[in-house]
Length: 237
Image (cartoon, rainbow, N blue to C red; front, side, top):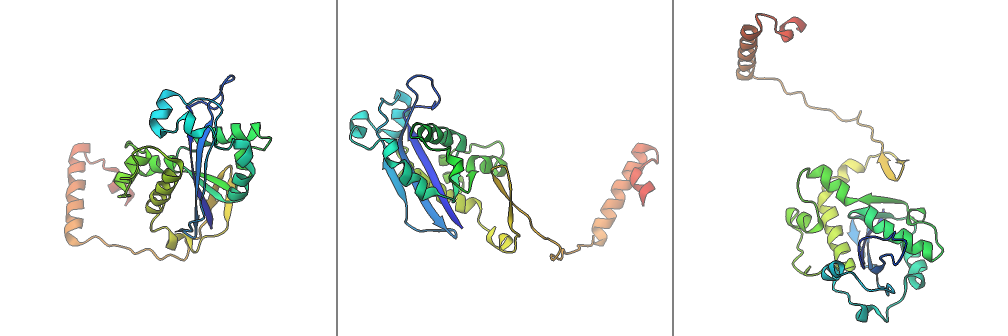
């Protein structure tokens, strides 16, 4: 399976402003094939044709002067689309990045991003399901999953894509054996759903020991007293 971890940096946080919309200043893609990094990565700095907002500049540190001689998105659009074609794309907080990709692609005369790729996985959604109620930004996940992010003083698209690959591998560790016998994936919207036949699995039956049975009986006796002899469990067995 070919997977691409993708991250962007932008001039701000709104790609859909009617006037002077925010633009991408960097895009990084890291390739994973059969859960192994290939080193076949893609990275561009981009001239956004506008200044970055102060808050965004503090995040990525990419000044207008540094970006002034970099290519515009239209010049690299086809290279990007060729690289991600038909792959499974993995992004942290995917709606944000895809909104910028779609806006840039539209300006360059291309179809929306998801039309070019196999599927999109949002690791932020995965993380919220695995760690409900906890902080699930990339730094928090690196700390929780023991991924070394000591070199991340500023956000960078390629570095963040590499960190995301490590985070994803740790989040999905141990799933290989389960997925080896999986059937063909079926598409539901933008999510690949794997249908699995579990009929071949033999589940162990653990019988309660004498101490556990005695404890269970004591609980039922107490329930009998509290309910005036109307314990539902007694009536069903």
